[in-house]
Image 1 (cartoon, rainbow, N blue to C red):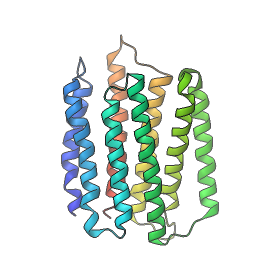
Image 2 (image 1 turned 90 degrees about the vertical axis):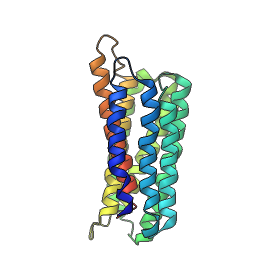
Image 3 (image 1 turned 180 degrees about the horizontal axis):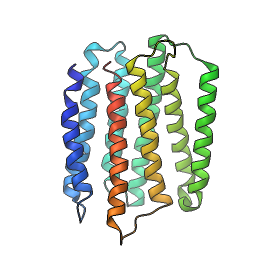
Image 4 (image 1 turned 30 degrees about the vertical axis):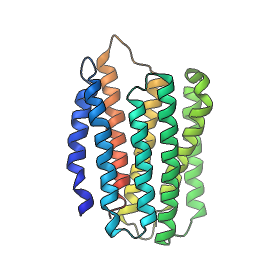
Length: 233
């Protein structure tokens, strides 16, 4: 139960973050305070799950992945600058690789046997989704095509490994939360990429940009919260 304590504080942080992000003009100081603080709350959720963890390695990897997300969050505060966006992309890429390792450890710890049929179907669906999204965004990405394709492939693999931890004969809450978090992460990043490469913000319509930020942030913080909570149940 200790792991649930930071959740209300995380919600409050996200509320103030959304207010700072949607202010006119954008409240950069508020974003610098509330964005990393919200992610730190998610890290605290994972760390507080350690005493009841079946696998300390699994929880440790989840916490480490969230630390890389925190680094990415800090860089993306100034994500309009290409160099900061690239640094944020790399930080999240490493974070996803760590999550892949964490989900793999969780699967082995729980004794879930690989289902080649299920995992093959999931891999095929994710490959089609990534391919369609990449083709749709391709013209607007320019020199970012290679890095973005690598990132999309890794996050799809992260979702795949989360699904691999499900025991369809005996569903438990932890793996279900991990799958939900992984899918929400994919959705959040897809919205962010589409807004950057296909539908860039219209300076004459700030309300549209605010709406996009709300969707990205809400799905992102829901994602890392579920991934962190998957350690605690």
